[in-house]
Length: 371
Image (cartoon, rainbow, N blue to C red; front, side, top):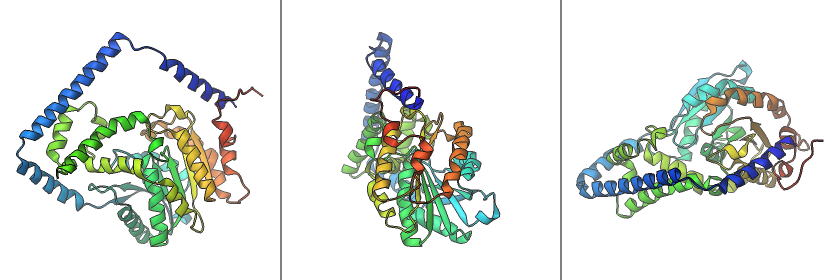
């Protein structure tokens, strides 16, 4: 009940803030940034116009060949805490702008074992881009090498959408049991990605498509990456050295994947895997994903296709920084862990974890009392 009132007042506070007029300094800063961006685009356009076409194409061809020869990899991070669980594994699949999830996985591996004691593995995407069949193949190979017969997939953000399709590939092609799919702050589709994020990404995607229209695969150019790094160093510092083509694939995956189709296919498997949605106790704080909308959509899809659905709220969860809230994740997972031993069809795990039914938990139109 208290949570509903807090959520309602958060919406009201946001509405009040939206009426606040920007100061002169804020307007000045905005104009300065916009002029800078326009000027930078002019410089980039002029640079590539003057660059000999043959040099650019050679640069692209060499990088494309190197990147496309790469394959995804699955890294071992932590062994199961109990020997009898060595035949199980949880694979962490990271989200946007991350190529190798090993570092993040190493920070939360012990915490993941609270909810699912198993070997903990981390996916490293291929530099050349995303291929679900290739990802599933590498997971299957590692499972065979280590005598693992059952896997859980832990997808973070956009990685959750990939986890759904990877699960179907593992089940249908490799006959591997997928016990659970964790969707941590994962969008349910394009509309679940914040508009501000889509606004930032769209110009880059449009630019890549324009270059494609004139026969240039600009995302493979190291020269282009160096120019962008030079001009927009402050804006893209958080992207590190993740290949542009991989980030393109990750973003497009988040905007174009049909999650309903993926979950529908999972509903046809026996046994069906659990789907666990991990959200924030303050959904509005997620700057990248509308986790409130995503949770509702995933719950509706799972219910339609009769897939067991769980929700675990984590206090203070910060998008893209699981390492900063490990203790909060551990507390939330400890509370929820006993429920994963229950698979009876009449057991309403969702209501038990969330404390209140989905509809009322996000219904801010009703006044709630303290009783």
